[in-house]
Image (cartoon, rainbow, N blue to C red; front, side, top):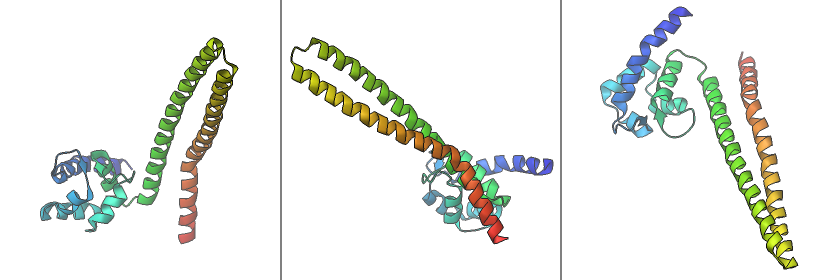
Length: 185
C-alpha cells in the first residue's frame, strides 16, 4: 500500500505536465477535441499511461461531472485511476454524487434567499395593508402573499426531498455497484 502511494505520487508531476502539454489554448481545461488533436508523441504517452488509444473513452471516463471539460485535477485523478485499474465506474459514481450534493446545497442556499425575499415582501404587504383604506387592496395583497407562501412551502418540501435523496445517493450507488460485482462474479 505504501509502495502504491509513492508510485502514485511520483506519477502526478508527469501527468500534470501531460495535461499542460495537451491544453492547446491554455484555458486550464481540456475538451475532447484538444485530447484528440494531441501530437502523436503525446497520444503515445497518454496511451502508455491509460492502456488504451480510445481518447473519447478516456475523456468520458474521467469527465466525472459530465461538463465536457476536464480540469487538471479531474484529468490527473482520472488518468491515475485508469492507469491503476481502479474501479473507474465506482469512482465516477462517487464523484457524481458529490457534485449532485454540491448542487443541492447551492439550491438550498438560493431557496433560503427566496424565503428572505418573501419575508420582506410579507412585511411590505403588511405595511401596505395597514396604510390602505380600501378593503379590496388588503384582500388582494393577502391573496398574493398566500400564493407566494404556498409556493414557497412546495419548493421547501421539494428541497427536503432532494436533500434526502442526495444524502442517500452515495450509499445507493455503492449498493448497486456491489450488487453488480456480485452478479458478475
